[in-house]
Image: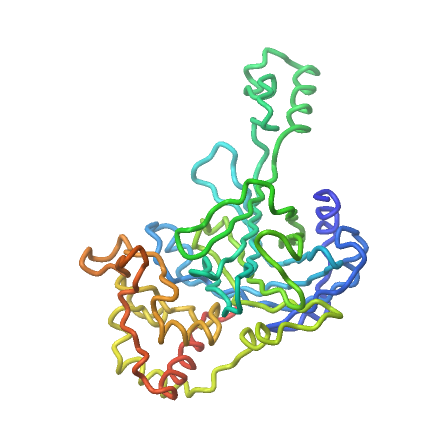
Length: 394
């Protein structure tokens, strides 16, 4: 399957008529692993914003990403009744591949995040790491070099450095060819998370997925294929996804990336999940100008960096791009129920007397004030203003 997908990606399919949208149509095909199926795909443009909630403790990386803009990615989806496949295409003028024996190189990569199955009807989880009772499943693919422990079978004859083999000429060429044929270059991981600091790799084979990425024409194409139903997800009419990409040339890793808000992928020919679609496409009905006044009046800038031009504040997460990768529903929830999703803290740059949360009966309780006392109109105005906080598109 991996070879089929990689051959598709190397074609550099043009994302014709890619339209910006909060929803994408997954075209019904007979087999998502058939290379010809992608000719039927319908691409849509999705905006990925710099993640800025937590300031990294890396001066060089922070400087490299100080003026980051939002990126556009073209996304398409297919499904065959059992599996769903997503293709993500984004521009990147510098191909960065993780070095096998280097601690200071970073790779390009991408991830597709799916909203996990829950026992009852739930709002979508936070796109970063999910939230308590609202899990997410993350499929991560990175560009990496071939490494010496090639096949995981403890084949010691191919684990030694070529300069220590004691062979030359054709024998050395034969050795290199053997290592190349066995070498593992694929960095594909699947994780499940239900809140920050709960990210756990799924290693038991319970997720039968496949991902790959290919570089051509100053850009990457990445594909993820996974079942519509397994131990972690159960999709019927609509598949909620979020997209993230990393730029190795800018030392991108972990939270240093560009990511989208939730996107609703509707399965062609099936009844959409109207609740999910409504949440993803909801627009704020408040007044952004009044919302800024209300935000200032309620002291939000005392703990949060509001815009990228403001000085960093380590007493709470930065809101500089929160309007780009957050839904209206999430922003509203964050104001009324700040403990529903707790971003990691305390931030090591903060003062020890200003932790972002406390632990009460084993549960993280946000240090943020509960603003449920505000009237509904004021809350909606603040949400409208928060939705304006996002970087320009490059």
